[in-house]
Amino acid sequence: MAFSFLKKANVTQPGTLIKAAAGKYKAIVDADPGDVNETQEKKKSNFSWLKTGKAALSALATEEARAAAAKAEADKMWRFMLQPDESAKITFLDGELNEDGALKFNAFYEHTIKLNGRWRNFICVAEIEEPEDCPLCARSDSPKTYVGALTIIDHRKHKIQNGPNAGKFIVNDRKLFVAKRGTLKLLTKIAIKHDGLAGCMFEDSRGNDKSPNVGVVFDFIKKYDSYDDIAAEWSLPMESVMPADYGEEITFYSASELIALGVAKAITGPGYSGNSSGKTFGSGKKVSGAGMADKL
Image (cartoon, rainbow, N blue to C red; front, side, top):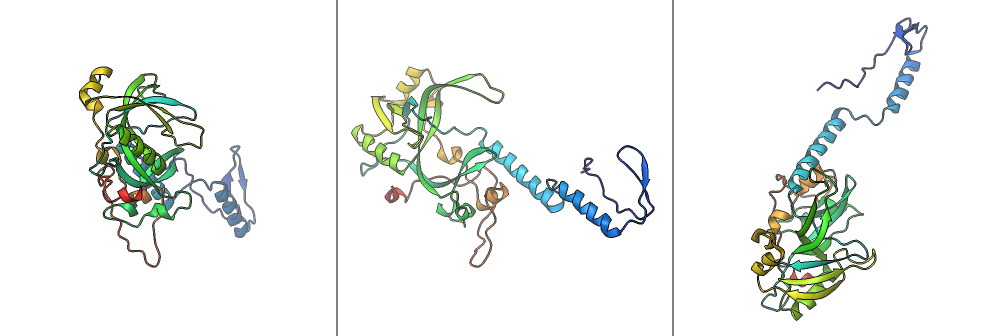
């Protein structure tokens, strides 16, 4: 690849004519080679933002990995969130009770990282059925969090701000409802009252910016008898009232992929087992709540 914006540096010798910026020539007479090298070092330091050699290739690999990740996420369901003091009508599409009378949901641990100015969530690879050494666990700014996922219909009307569909409105959008432990406990109590959350519509409200972004007050409105009833009332196709395929909607990134994305550093040193394996984005492991019910 030709980097036409980079100018090759040449060490000039005493008596050499060089072309000045104004287009005139001047001679370097009795120049000290050390002075020339010092000048070049100063010029080089002025362009510290330039990446060359291995650094340039590494940056290119990171950008390619991020582009692949963005493509993998492009058609995924959005996460449901409320702004402080906002409310919304929502209908749960899953959340039945298990044989012990407890709420069923898909659980996993995740890290939250700011990437390219946006907050992103990544599954902790140390907390899966075939664990890896998690490079995100080494970051002090991203503790892992236990969460549970359900599917809802968000009945708000939302205007798309960016992209090819900017300006269009979305209503009755199916979204992932990803809640932390405190909210899951609250929803479990509510689910017991209504024989499960599936089919239940609530007026969901959030408090201030310190309260959970999925809401903290769930005022019961009604419960639908079937998916057909939900689809009929809101004029939706059946695929829009079905629970999510969580293994498809929540992208799993292996340890090596997290490192490639630039959100974590490679794990090295004594005791490192080196058991992370690369996989293509979006082809990862299924998310499951098996074995995690006792951690709620």
